[in-house]
Amino acid sequence: MDHVDRLLLAQLQRDATQSYAVLGQAVGLSAGAAHERVKKLRERGVIRRTAAEVDPAAVGGGVLAFVTVDSTSWMGESSEAFAAIPEVLEAHVIAGSASLLVKVRTATTEQLQDVLRRIYGVAGVSGTQATVVLETFFERQVSPLLVDGDPPL
Amino acid sequence: MDHVDRLLLAQLQRDATQSYAVLGQAVGLSAGAAHERVKKLRERGVIRRTAAEVDPAAVGGGVLAFVTVDSTSWMGESSEAFAAIPEVLEAHVIAGSASLLVKVRTATTEQLQDVLRRIYGVAGVSGTQATVVLETFFERQVSPLLVDGDPPL
DNA sequence: GGTGAAAAGCTAGCTGA
DNA sequence: TCAGCTAGCTTTTCACC
Image (tube, rainbow over the protein chains, first blue to last red):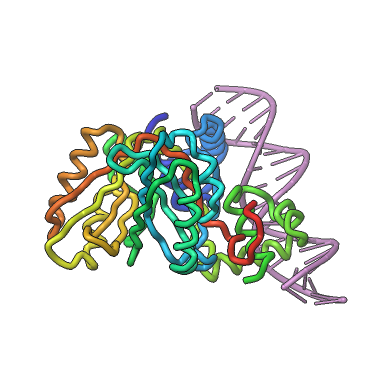
C-alpha cells in the first residue's frame, strides 16, 4: 500500500459516493486505475465495507454511555453474549482493574438502566460502572494519512 | 420516518454499494421509490454520509486506548484542541469525576505515549488515565430497527 | 407517496503499452 | 500498473397514477 492508496482511502472515508472519475482526478489517476486500486483495497480487506452513517439521535440512540464491566471469570469468550444486546455498539477487553469496556446507545436513561440489567445477566459479570456522555465533540475514523507523515485531509 | 425507512437504513448500514433496484426489492419498493426515500433521508441528515470503513490495523492504528482526561477548568469549549490531534478518534464530555473521555488509535504504544503528551498540552488538562484495549470483540453502528421493536437484522 | 420508462452517466472488464 | 475503449448497468428525472 503506497501513498496513492492512502489518499484514496482518505477520500472514500469522507465520501464513498464519488464516481471513480472524480476520485481518480483527486489522486492523479484515471477512472479505470482508481477503480482497480479500490477494488484491490476491498479484496485485501483494507476497506471492510462501505456503509451509510446514520445519525444515532434520529433512530433512538440519543443517550450514549460507556460502561466498564467487572467479572469473576475470564471474559475472553463472551463476545456473543454482548453482541446479543443490540444497544451495545462496542465491546473491548481491556488491561486494568475492570475486564471489559462497552459502549452503549439507548433512547432514554430508563432504557440504559435496562441494558445494564441485561449486562448483569451475562455469565461471569459481577459489576458494572456506567459513565453517561453529556456531549460528544466528534466521532471519526482513523486517518490513513498519518502513516507517511502527510497532513490529515 | 416509518418502518420502511428504518429497513432502508439497516440495509445501507450493512452495504451502501447495493443498487436501488436491489435495495427496493429488499424492502418491497420500486427502485425509484427507494431512491426517493434514501435521498430524503440524506437531506434530513438521518444519513450523515456514506463512507468506506477502513481496517485500523492496516493504516497504523493497531493500538487502541481509551483515555479519561482530568481538568482544572471547564472543558466544554476545547473541541478543536482535541480535534487537532489526529490520533484522537472520539472525544466526549462525561458526567463523573473525569471531564472527558477520548478514544485513541496509534500504531505503537510509543506513539500512544506521545499522544498522551499532546493531550497534556491542551489548556486546562491536569491529568490523564489511559486504558489499553487488549482485544476488540466488535464495533458496530446503532440499529435503526430497535425503535419499533423489530428484531435486529 | 408510488410506478415505470428514458436519457445521461457510471462501472467493470479488456486490450495495448 | 496505467490509460483508453466499450458494453452493460445504474442513477436520476419525468409524466402519470
